[in-house]
Image 1: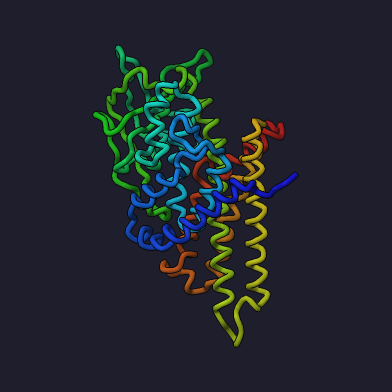
Image 2: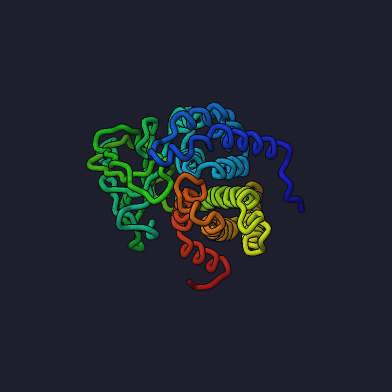
Amino acid sequence: MDFQLSDEHEALRKTVEEFAREVVAPQAERLDREEEFPYDIVRQMGEMGLFGLPFPEAYGGMGGDFLSLCLAIEELARADSSVAITLEAAVGLGSMPLYRFGTEEQKREWLPDLCAGRALAAFGLTEPGGGSDAGNPRTKAALDGDDWVINGSKAFITNSGTDITTLVTVLCRTGERSNGKPELTSLMVPVPRDGFRVAPKYSKVGWHASDTRELVLADCRVPAVNILGERGSGYRQFLSTLDEGRVAISALAVGLAQACVDESTRYAKEREAFGQPIGGYQAVAFRIADMDMRTHVARLAYYDAAARMAAGRPFKREAAIAKLYSSTIAVDNARDATQVFGGYGFMNEYPVARHWRDAKILEIGEGTSEVQRILIARQLGLPV
């Protein structure tokens, strides 16, 4: 058993680390303060091939694997979680369902621009009144001749309203099964489009430079051929998509947790109190040591889930564990880093304040911590 990265993975990690340090980090505070979407950074990430990391070269991708994507997300999150979630959502939620379940024609039409970062895709799952009850959407779609007609709304959708968003996949209720449960189907909506409206950006606690909006579909017509996979397969698709996405969100959480370790260690060496650096006091040093321990364990958890996924082995339980643990320790590390910085940790000019605001959503998005515990318990055979 070897937890060391391969030479190729390590080279990628170092490349993204350098990009995050030299390009992303210097802009992070301004982007957060001005709540500005990082178009220029996205363009550069596209040129680096980051949006195409896990996809075959035949579609414009880099021919890598899911761990490659996770490593990139982790390094970006050390600088700015908004940039990291832009990549994670664009690939894991936007492009990956198309690659996993789309037809060859659909993939060749959409993936090249998505892999190059020239366009972004989004996935419309959550609804204003739904939350964790994602399997019971109110958004409906009905066939009318050669078109699907969609009516409903989606909430908290990342990358859905940028100037380069070209595709939003929407989970819809398209009928009812014999057992009374809804028939769910994924439909791809090219945007902009008549009947498709993007609401203004949310005013959020964190992730200020990330694009997050509510979507409204009113008699929005899309061609019948824009169905993703088979009719009625939407529930299975989004469960699979979320399993993979939880590994990527875990990587993002680890990146934020590592950033808190990095900032706290640096500050504890420089800041003096009572005649010596505060890192010389056990109250501070032990706090940072605990932060580092938690981060290390969380990283191993997502490495394990990603390795199982790459090997084609079951990974639902491991993905849930990684997501649950890493999001929890990201919040813990952000709180502890703020404490290490004292009053300065409460000032937005210091990165730890941004990390503190960005961390909480990790316990909510792509499956709350409560949902992760349900998934783990079910994998243990418990009737929850």
